[in-house]
Length: 389
Image 1 (tube, rainbow, N blue to C red):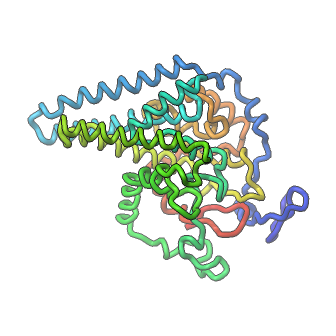
Image 2 (tube, rainbow, N blue to C red):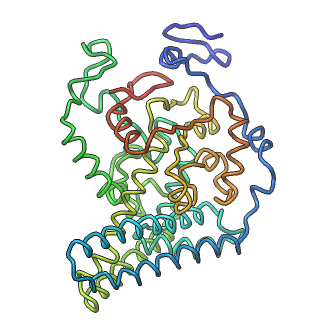
Image 3 (cartoon, rainbow, N blue to C red):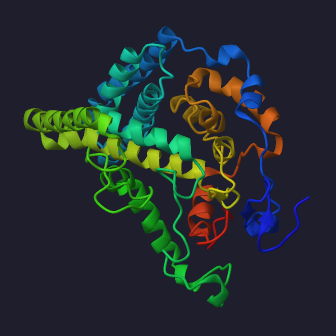
């Protein structure tokens, strides 16, 4: 039993500060990766190229079908009907294309096929088509998986600290744990901020590595010399950049052949929808008032992997998104597991993790509002820190 005090002795003579963990009644997971793996049937780890390709063809067929159907929208005389149908197309195409992006992400984890050649070929095409630098992102995403939940090692979801958001030290802060007037904003401003981050958040992250570990210099998925990458990865990063440049050139060519308005309608707006889904899904997977962050003294891989929140988006969207959101916990423990086994594996991992399995059934719009308004910063000190507002 751990008793409260400013410093606590755990694991021999190691001194750690877990005051927030005690205050929140947070218990550290003590399971091993082997224990979790042994709880999941072995067939869940098998990769089947033909089955994976069937999902790829499913997505491509839907994308093409939606595009063909959209070509008839302007034949309707009513402006209201045309506008409504275009909006329906953008929403539907965004969700289907996001599913294709998820398959590209699966390729980057080597979960699509036992063949590296197939994985990288399919992944490169899918991600490049959606303006994601395939190799660059899979390199940084691998570090995200290896450092999830760590206050400095993660590459995607490092929360700002008290000092970084401009608040006084805890012992000098009259509002202490909050909520802070510093973050007061009208609902309209909050909504504007949410819309803005869902439109530009993904390209900003790719260009600036905004929510990753802060270091000097230009950290970007388009800078092969930055410290996101190893020297041996330089060539692959350059290949990714060339792919993006070629895709942009193709879009420009399509604009010249079919008109800029057609490119905006058929590609750009669904592409922005994919970006918004990327931000929404990944943000809610790893950010919640219930999910702490660890520092070196208490972090290990399995503890970090457990700091993941499964959320359901409803049967249809879960299907179109290849269950990236409602089976994300098992994905962080075993990223080479194909998505079509993840639902079954989740049933087993829930039992193995017990109270350490994280799931939230709050409707997604309400969950987004709650997380955005309550998860503002963490303390500068402490080996276990929770979000505060």
